[in-house]
Image 1 (cartoon, protein in one colour):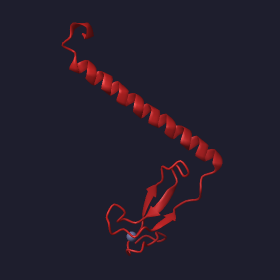
Image 2 (cartoon, helix red, strand yellow; image 1 turned 120 degrees about the vertical axis):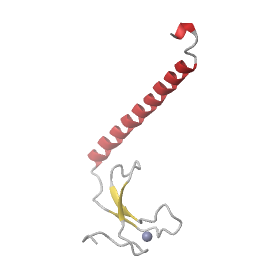
Image 3 (tube, helix red, strand yellow; image 1 turned 45 degrees about the vertical axis):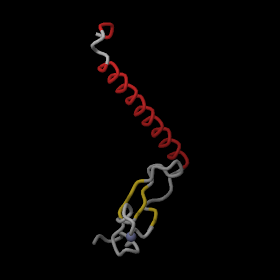
Length: 93
Ligand SMILES: [Zn+2]
């Protein structure tokens, strides 16, 4: 057992998770290891201090760029798939 890791109400060492909410983007917190199971205890504690307002603005801006990039990639793959579907038509070759 590592020193300093809180124990949740299930008696397990809590795991560190990263928050991706708009209020706390990139901020880490402790959560129950059973979170995905029905038996989780709803333990919660922040791992590190809140972000400064400037850090929050920067991280939220970066997240928006990443989301846009992801959307652009999906559109690119969709167009590529569409082109493959109709590649037998001569005007696309
Ligand atoms: Zn627990």
